Image (cartoon, rainbow over all chains, first blue to last red; front, side):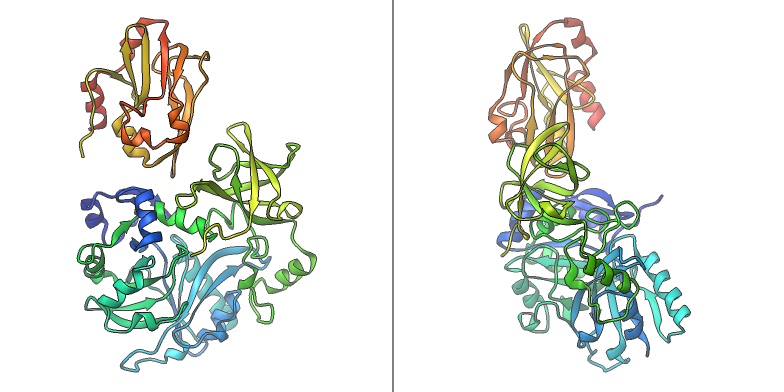
Amino acid sequence: MALETPPLRDRHAEAGAKFTEFGGWDMPVEFDGIRVEHEAVRSSAGIFDVSHMSEIEVSGPDAERLMQRLTSNDVTALDAGDAQYSTITDAEGDIIDDTVVYRLPETDDGAGDSESSFLFVPNAGHAEQMHDRWTEHRDDWDLDATVYDATYDYGMFAVQGPDAVGHVDDAADVDVDGISRFSATWASVAGVECLVARTGYTGEDGVELVVPWNRAPEVWAAFAEERDVQRCGLGARDTLRLEAGLLLSGQDFDHESNPRNPYEAGIGFTVKLDTEFVGRDALEAAKAEGVDEKLVGFKLVDRGIPRHGYDVTDTDGLVVGEVTSGTMSPTLDDPIGLAYVSTEYTDPGTTLRVVVRGDSKKARVESLPFYER
Amino acid sequence: MSFNIPDDRQYMESHEYAARDGDTVRVGISDFAQDELGDVVFVELPDVGDEVTHDEAFGVVESIKAVSDLYAPVSGEVTAVNENLFDAPELVNDDPYGDGWMLEISLSDESELDELLSADEYDAQVA
């Protein structure tokens, strides 16, 4: 299978990036070392090329109804320019993917009916699946909406860290600090019209920029070159999001290999049972009955590093769960991880054991997030 | 990018080096290997007195992003372990051929050294 390439593949290679396959894309995994990049984001700022993320645009008179019926959160709560974290669930309530939904802000020229235009950002490799899901349900329900896969129209960059907003503000023609958390606006950044959103996946303040694919290099250069913002790869993105207790689709839940509903995954706040959406009835029942397993954060007390797929046991060695993500936390300097465990073991402070290559290592349940700015 | 491949030692295709000093062989991983792994955060090594076997795994090195087995270039008894790596695994990145060494093995079969790569041969492999 040929890998998709982000608009800046060659420029990243020239900057010394190492690459990895992720969701069918050939993406930079690190530029100057995961630890250096991670620390830059925690202490100053870093820029990530996240052009592998999918972008689906939904517009037309029934766009809001279609979005409401296919996502678990309440899109009617969004004013123009607002964003929300949400999930796409199947009829059993299991997560197919997680996403951020934007109700697009008004454009300067007032073109289009922005009240009914949405953009949502599924994970890498999910664009076609989501485009098909949206068009099939639109047709089944006879709704009047246009669904467009814009993944190859846009690049996406995340500028994250305590200095990130200042850098973007410096490059933009709007007051970026005036954009509230989980809101977005259209702005010219480095002379390029972009969607500027106060969102991110690192646990820091910051901005995500949705930029026209063919002008992505100018915007990247404005930060990585002109403002000397640390280039960061997917390696640091993973350690940052894990410290912040944020989930990774395909790893902390996977519709095929590890189906989980939002309550199990600890993101029940994305479920609004007073709305109508695919999976709602199953989730109402799951909430009433309670779930058998839940995602917890933990630290290894013994030496070792937890990794995806390792067994979690109780202190008697009985398997009670499985690790979904794990790493050595660069900020805390502790081995941390996420695991689904039986609900009786989810209280912070509970002692568990993680089986690392046949050796049982002591672990302790921690409240999430591991890191909060 | 070019890597430091000193010619005073031999290498395995799996990127461990063997530096012979009399009957003792000091083992670690190459500059190329530490760069490929990225930030090393954990090293698991055998105990002094354990036996290791040529071409078989003797331990594990973990970076933030990857877990890799370590293979023994020669068979023999472990005579020393670099315990500094348990508290400072980043020594593997900072000085792979010096302070980042891992094990010393007492050589039991010299012919095993013949199967290892010279610096030039290893250079050709990673180039």
